[in-house]
Each structure stands twice: as C-alpha cells, then as structure tokens.
Length: 281
Image 1 (cartoon, rainbow, N blue to C red):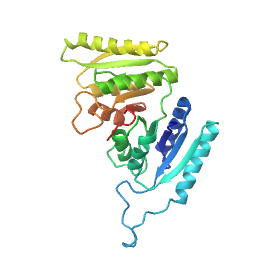
Image 2: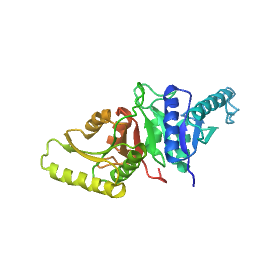
Image 3: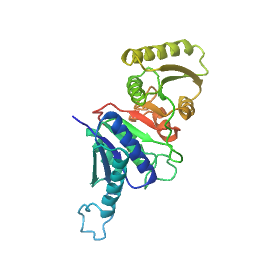
Image 4: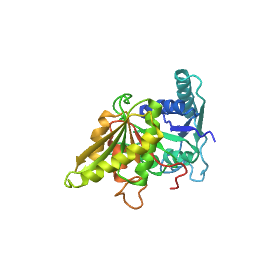
C-alpha cells in the first residue's frame, strides 16, 4: 500500500511552509504527496442564509486555485514528485484526522487561518497532533525559517511510546544523514536517578546502533525540574524533535502526553509526533 504524505493547506503562510516540508518528506520516503483543503468551518457547517437550505456547500473556486497553485510550485521545486490535490467537505482538523487513516505521514503548520488567540499551535494542529492515526509532523516555529541543520532529538523515558519515538527518530536521522541525539531528563531533586537514567539511555542507544549501525548516536542526560522545558530548550539546537504520543505521567484520556503537548506548542524546531500507523482514537 503506497500510503501518501498528506498536508493540510489553507493558503496561509504556515500551511504553505508545511506543504514544502511535506514535499521533502514525500521525496525522502518515495511516497506521493496529497494536498488537502477541508473547506467547512472547524465547528460545523455554520448557519445557512436560508434556514431550510442545509445542504453541504460545493468546493470553492478560490480553494481550487489555491491548491493548484501550491501544487504547481511544489512540482517545479521537486520534479517527479507525484502530487494530488482535493477539497474535502469537512472541518480542517476532522478532515486531516480522517485522512490520517490512510496516510504515511500527516503534516500541519503551526498556525493556519482560523487559529484562536492564545493558542500557539491553533485548533486544527492541536486536534491532528492528538488524534491522528499515523505520525504527524508539526512544522514550527511559525515566525522564522524552519531549521535545516542540526540533529534529530528524541526524549527517552522507558515508556513504549518513547521506544516508538526512538525508532522513528532513527529513521528520520538516517534519511537526513544527520546525528541522532537521545535525551533523558532526570529530576534534579533526585541524584540517585542518574544511574538508572544512564542505563536507560544506553539501552535505547544500543537498540538503535543494532538497527542502524552507520548512524551516529549520542546519549545526553539532562537534569531539570520540568522535562518539557528542558526538551524545549534542547530543541533550539535540533532540526527535528520526535515526541511519543503518550509518555509516562500522561493523563488518562489524553492521546498526547503533557510533554508532547508542550513540544508541539513551544519547540524551536519541527516536531514529529510518533503515533503508530492504525492508531485508534
């Protein structure tokens, strides 16, 4: 099954930046690229002018032109990339979550049109990062160029989601030809944890070296009171940070743990949320 890389496009600068990153990801994976525009309001169909007219509106001409222009620009930059465009009658977040069932990767911008004040990521990106059925790449930061230099950074805490994140991180580092940095944040108030943390990192690094013998793997032990803040700070030197979809300490009912949420809202580089394929919301 040749699952595509799917990116949500609404014409905003963050979504167009996401489309570029999605095209690069599709080329790296030898996958087709699908540009998708969900053209209904995120909260529903809205109030029709005629209260008896409850039909779903047709795709817009402006949406079609925006998608076709985006596709043409990407095709010029990445010749040979297979690109498909379509408008879907659905809210942007729900549309991309549904698309993720058949996708290799879903890519979202860190702020699109219609984002709510106070949310750095925006409602669409938050929804997709938390509920997608495949890995999600959140392209950030929104206010400066996406970093291209630096290692792939993965937080390690011994949980199953973190193990999946390490695997995804190794694959990404191999694709990019860059270093993989495994980070564990130990509680600065518990010095006795250092030995266990070092063993945790060593085990994760040994697994990566076994599957990717040519990959440069670095183990980094940090101490901090708040793991999310330490990882956000470390992301300033990375090209990508990979977060598990649920780590230790996550709250019941949340598909994205508190550290993952902090990273997708505040990291200083793009964030890959390591949902497994076929993840059920």
